[in-house]
Image 1: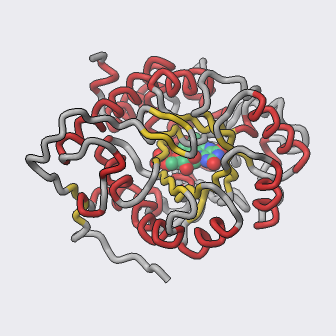
Image 2: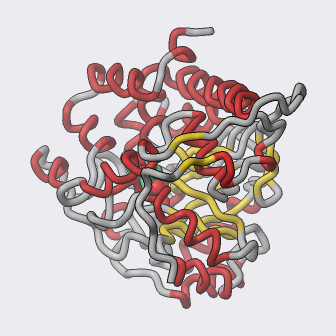
Length: 352
Ligand SMILES: Cc1cc2nc3c(=O)[nH]c(=O)nc-3n(C[C@H](O)[C@H](O)[C@H](O)COP(=O)(O)O)c2cc1C
């Protein structure tokens, strides 16, 4: 085991904090408003506990899963994060992060509107995440992703306006990361990329544009989950943008059960926000998620060790997930269920 493989996400974050400038560290770590939702993502997980079953006789344990046709070593994706953020964190940037995810056999969601190229390491586990502002430019991106063998596309819908992120303002970072724009700009340069809020019409348009599985990211209510399934999306991502958009939104793990119930198997359910360890992954899967996304923790691994750092962190997450499954008494992620979660400290969520 390398040093990085042995490090927890918290330890990686501490190492990254020492290496990065305060402006870059805060750009990645910070949230919107008073950062209540940023905290809620973690608190939601902290309130939950796992319920192990014993003597189940499992011996051959695997974390492998196929998510929307994408075969993965575990149902884990790196969440989409703007390309410039990667570059600020490590000189090898997005390429190193995507390579590390591929090395570990997990999925990688590329924030397409802010990278120079979609031609990144990885296979069918790559997901092209877009914002729809300029349909022509978005269509070009999707066509490129299809040509490169991406496994899915993802529309992020929780950024109708950029949120107030005080840490960035204090560091003089107006909205997004300082740094370059994108060759994919074609009408939606980094700075204009949220100029028009997306609507359900955009969802229908994107749905009609591609035969690839389509995810809708930013779903935080049963109502929107139902509308998403009605609109024919293949998966919803329960996400509050890592606490970076609407402050005082619930933590994602708190919302997950109502979304799973509302979707009722009509679409896959993914979750991101606050996932730091294999036990977080197991909790989310047990509560009905088909896969999870990890954002900031991967950035800390990137800062700590580039591609090898990301691969090391994600590999040890997968290995540890196998161990966690074994300790829970199950042989696969599909066998996880609500009976493996003790929610007695979790507040009830609204399901209507
Ligand atoms: C630096 C940074 C940049 C991000 N950029 C994007 C983006 O371009 N598109 C998007 O859909 N989400 C973006 N997000 C949100 C993540 O995809 C994800 O929802 C969130 O980070 C998950 O929470 P976690 O960081 O606690 O794991 C970004 C997050 C961070 C930390």
